[in-house]
Structures are given as C-alpha cells and as structure tokens.
Image (cartoon, rainbow, N blue to C red; front, top):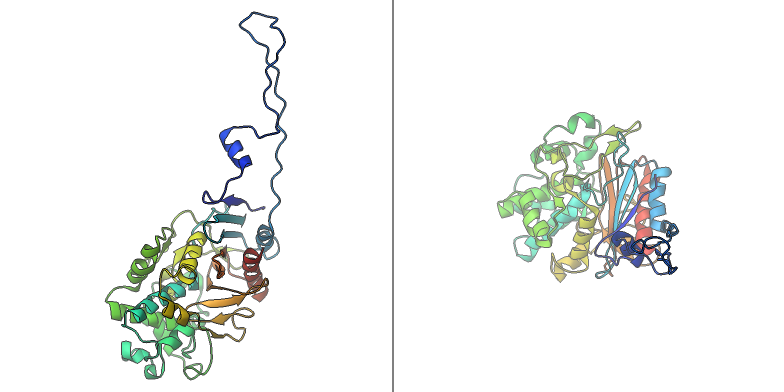
Length: 401
C-alpha cells in the first residue's frame, strides 16, 4: 500500500494545494465561460456555456525517502511505517506513512501517530543525569556506590559515566528474560529492583571500563539514582525537566500497569503470523525504555538537545558527545556517548540520536548538526539484522536526500 506524504502547516503550501482547498482555479486552467452572444430566450435568462472538465493534476512522484519506506513494507514485510522529517530552521515538517496501521482492519497508519520509543528513553534519562551534573548533585567520575550504597555489586568500581556509556560491564537483564513468553510477561508489573535482581544473578560481563556492551541494567540503576537524589519518581523528573520544558505534547512516560497507548497510534506486532502486542505493561523497560512519543516530538527533542542547547549546557553536551567504539554491536560505524549515538552519513558527517526497540515497534533517527532531523518507526521488531539495517538506511536517505 502506497504511503502518503502530508506537509505540515509549518511548511510552505503550494499554490496548487491552496487552490484545491479553496475552490479557486489555477492559472492556465479552464474557467467557466459566459457567452457574449445575444440573448435568444427571455431577457432574464443568459446562456452560459458549460465549462470543460478540468485536467486532473497528476500526483507527485514519491520522493526517495518515501520509496525507501515503501520498501520496508514491500520487501522487509513490516506492517506499517510512520516517519517525520524536520527541516533546518523553520523549514517545516514532512510526515510520511507506508503500509497499514492495523492488520485486522486495513486502516492506514495515523500520520505522526504515537509509538513506543523504547531505548530512546535512555537519552531522556541521560539528560536528567547531566542536568544533575550541572547542578553539582552528580559527578560523572564518582562511583554509583556513592549514590546508591549497597545496590550494585562492585558498585565502588563502577562510575556514573560507565553506566551512561555502557562500559560498566553489568549484565543486561533483558537478555535473561528472553526465555519468557512475552505474550504472558507483557501483562506483568516488574519493579525496578526486580529487574536488577534478574541481572545481578549473573556475573559481570567484563571489568568496569574494560569493554563495551549495551546494558539496559545500567539505565535502570540510573533511574534509581535520579530518584534517590531528587526524592521524586524518575517519570516526574523526565516530565518536568524535559517534556514540559520543551512543550512536547505528544511525549509521555506511561504509568506502571498502564498497558494502553494514547490515540492515534498504529498496532504493534511480533512474529509471523503477526501477533498483536500493542498493549503491554511498560514497567519491564522503565527508565531504560518505557516512553511513548510521536516522530515529530522525537525530532524536536533531539534538535533541542543537540543543536539548540535548550536542555543542557555546553560542557554537559560535550561530555554527552564524547563517544566510544561499539565494535559493530549496534549498526556499522555507530559510536556511543552518554545516552547518545553518532552514526556516519553516506553524504558526509554524522547524525546524533539513539533509537529504540521494544516488542511491536522499532524507532531509528536523529539530527544533523545543521538541525535537519528524521525519525522512522516501524510497527514490528526486525526479523534479523538485514531488516534492522534497512531501517537505519531509511534514516540515512531522509537526512541525505
């Protein structure tokens, strides 16, 4: 099913679109013609010639980005795609869809619909940590034992920076939940300490600072640290310090046991034949991946953070942009900072963002240094690395076309 492109009201609307919406005729098109011949019948009845049928204006050909999204549906068999591109400055927003938003009804994906953004949550959590750094309440080099005594095994050897950068060596609790049936556990509430218990039942992957491995565990620990320091739930801190500050009206941290999603949203699927897993308790992902947002809001967030300097100061942003090698564990060329990734662009330079995967949804995207931003959300988890890389390639197309 061909996707549609909807141009934001913030973007320039063409004369053709204005004419179609207002009922005006375009220059050069046929208009109704009133005859100048003498009146033949009653003087009060002028003869009006029939206007010719207007020539239909052909639909514009899909741009390269739209074609790449169509390919994610046709070739990679993702049920649906929702995407948005934010142009530099006040250049406007382009919204995209492809496929279907509901396999049961065949309904189209909602333009700029809500999706579960998974590990993009880590960027929000990292921003709160860096704000606490700026406030003098957290030091990146200090051990997590200082802030959460007795919580993390060998906590004296693990720094806050290592937790933010996935160099702590802590085992990833989600890897040890894979034997569970997600269709059952998605309806189960998991407290943060329960998630840590799953992780800490396994030994460290490597000594702190001696390697790199993605670990959701570290970001659950950081969520607990935020709560200990501020005395408030991490969801409230993210809401107050980030969401409300930027006016993100389509971004939120769902409450525990709230399995729903705000409307409009597409359905999310797993496995083949497709299993609808849209509803799930977000507690199992918590400060590592529970949040929900729209592609537009994600673009606004990353641009505000990385280009506009609206969330952290220059020293803190420089720390966040200091990266280490991920050894191709994520996707080619990616490096990891503090809650951020940098990815090389085919057209030169890099873009900054994060990305997220939860059952039913994958999101990828980020922002260039000139402010152009793009987000792509597919409504199923990738079935293998090739599909995953095709989503990453679509982001590259959006940022380089």
